[in-house]
Amino acid sequence: MVGAWRSEIGRFAVLSCASRHKARRRGCFAIGGSRTGKKRVLTLGRFPEMPLKEARIHAIEERAQIGRGADPASRVSTRTAMTFFELAEKRLSEDSTIGEGSKRNYRHCFTSDVYSAIGAIPAASVSGDQIARILDAIEKRGSPVQADRTRAAIGSTFKWAVKRRLANVLADPTTGLGKRASSMPRVRVLTTDELGRLGNP
Image 1 (cartoon, helix red, strand yellow):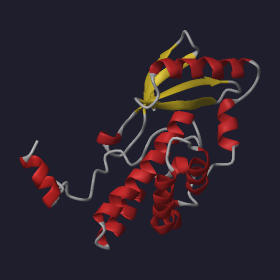
Image 2 (cartoon, rainbow, N blue to C red):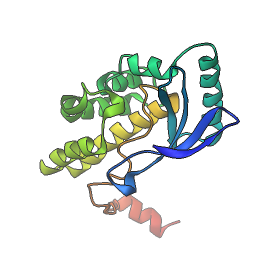
Image 3 (tube, one colour):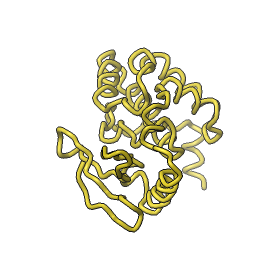
């Protein structure tokens, strides 16, 4: 990763995250330093999911931890990684903003196709390519609408994690995957009563 360090918060920067594909390169907020002669870099989050103001606050907090002798990078690397299964189940049990019907739909998506493919993988390590393969398999069964529902369930779970800084998730890997089902307008035939009301306002 490369970038210009900002000295007023110690070593704080917007860095370029490495990727084999230029279109997938993202800006990362990070702090860095050296306590034992070995350079360390701790990623705080990705832009634009994490606003600059929030990144600066977290940078100041982490620098304070370092000043007290802590090693945030080691704390993150040694922490037990939360799997996607654990993250999804946590969201289903704690997120009060989604209704019971949506939770049932999400759980159906997860248990039918997702958990078997990426459930045991650390959530922060799940890639867009892995999710695309799940959606491909669903679409090949002749269910493009279900593929879109599954993408939405996975994506909303990652967005929920990013907002709460859970499982070291920095971004939603479903971004850019797009819809599988064609956007056809719905057609409904009016009933006799409805036609009558149209003619008699």
